[in-house]
Every structure is written in structure tokens, then in C-alpha cells.
Figure 1: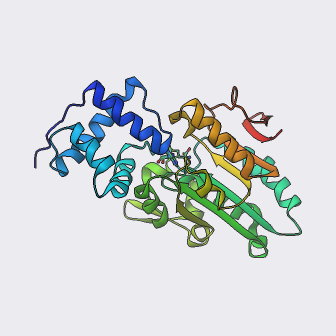
Figure 2 (figure 1 turned 60 degrees about the vertical axis):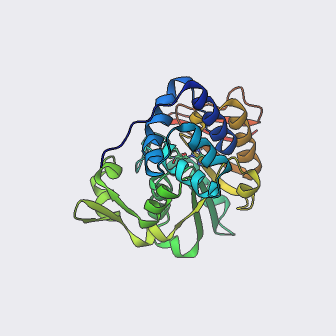
Figure 3 (figure 1 turned 90 degrees about the vertical axis):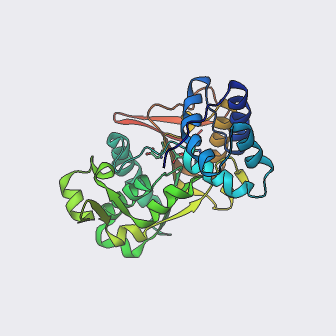
Length: 280
Ligand SMILES: C[S@@+](CC[C@H](N)C(=O)[O-])C[C@H]1O[C@@H](n2cnc3c(N)ncnc32)[C@H](O)[C@@H]1O
């Protein structure tokens, strides 16, 4: 089957960018027009639509709007991730934050960790591995909840399978790989105990009320997603994390992201390996 390449005009790009932004907070810069164009061109072909005007109509006024928005987000989001991504920052979590938290929660023995925008699950599973090896035999005394959320249903399906290609585990050290993964052909299946520590839900970070229904968290990871948002959406997310974080909780954002200039009171915790944040 040959795929027609359908061109997107500047006006069509601006209309589509507005629709995407209003629904998700994802803001496509002018230089990213080609991303929308190339990723959605095949979709237009599948739907037998002639041009992007027809697609915008289908998306915003057609009978299958909700489904099509989902389909579109599955295609246009950047889902790059891997196990132990940016390991120095994860060392801060495991060596600095987690021991103090386990101490502080030693009576309730509950721990709640949220990986917002978790893509295909490598990040929350990495945190579960770290908690698993930190607690060792004490794990069964604790009620651990690690939640991974994302706007894309497609990546969440991979997350739920716990099965990954070599690309996802390329930074995992051989001892961890041997202990926590079982090779199955070209794929790597995560250890079922670690897998059972994590659950996944679809969540659009634009939907503040939906996010709030998951309650408060001891640690929030929101790495490498705010780079796709404009300042207003970054501010809204930072406020959401502030509200949903326990008073002694910790926030991690991506190492190339910043909370500077945002209207929210977080205090940076500068560790040699990287930053974490607590409520100011
Ligand atoms: C680059 S991945 C980051 C994954 C992981 N946090 C990491 O750092 O490795 C960004 C993820 O953000 C998700 N995303 C983008 N906009 C979102 C939104 N409005 N709500 C929830 N997730 C969103 C995308 O679907 C994508 O999976």
C-alpha cells in the first residue's frame, strides 16, 4: 500500500496546533510543523480524507471526536524513555530521598509515588526496582503504590505488558538486568513482583480534577514532559504538583527542565548528582 504524503498549510498548522494545545497543553513551536504533518499524514490516508481541513473537522466536529483525539495523541506524543534514564538523578531518589522517606513513614508503612507522563512505564518500573532492592525482605511489611500515568493509551499498553525491547534496557547494569528481567527472544520481561508494585492509568495533565482524584503523593516524578508545554501549562502543572505533594514530599523534574520563573513555591535541593525539589 502506498501512503500519500499530504501537505499541511501554515493556516491548517495553526488551527491544529490550537486544538492540540487546548486539549493537552502540548504546544508545537513553528519549527515542529513537520512533526504534526508527518505523523498525521498517514492517519488522513487511513481515514480517506483529502486534506487537513477535513481532518480538523473530523477531529473537532465529527461523531468520533473522543476516539480520534486519543488516536491523535497516540501518534503525536514524543514517548522517548528508558529504564534508569538519567541515573544520577535516580541515585538521588534511591540514596537520599527514599531512605529518609522510609524512616518518616516507618509507622504507617505506606509509600505513594506518582510518575506523571510515564510513557511506556520504564520510569515507574525503575522506581519500583529501586524500592524493591532497598526494602529487601521488608517489602511485604509495606504498602507500596507506584502509579504511572500518561495521555497516550498506546504507550500504556506497553507499560502494562512489562515486556520491553533491548533499546529500553540498554542502560541497565548487567546485575540488575539479570536479577529483574527474563530474556524472551529479543524481548525482556520484567520480574512479576516488581511489575505488581506499579499500576497505570490514562491521565491528561491538563485535567487537574482528574489528577486530583488520585490523592496526595510522597514523591512525584514529572520528567521530560514540561518541555512540550508553554508557560501557562507549565505553571498549571507545577501548581498541581505542589497541591498533590505531601508536605515532606519530593518532586523530580527532567534535568533539562526548570521551575524558575514559575508562579509556585518549590525549593531546590541541590544534590551533587542533580536537583530535586521540596515545597517551599
Ligand atoms: C518524553 S516522554 C517522558 C517519559 C518519562 N517521564 C521519562 O522521562 O523518561 C513524555 C511523555 O509525556 C506524555 N504527555 C504529553 N503531554 C501529556 C499530557 N498533557 N498529559 C499526560 N501526559 C502527557 C507523552 O505521551 C509522553 O509519553
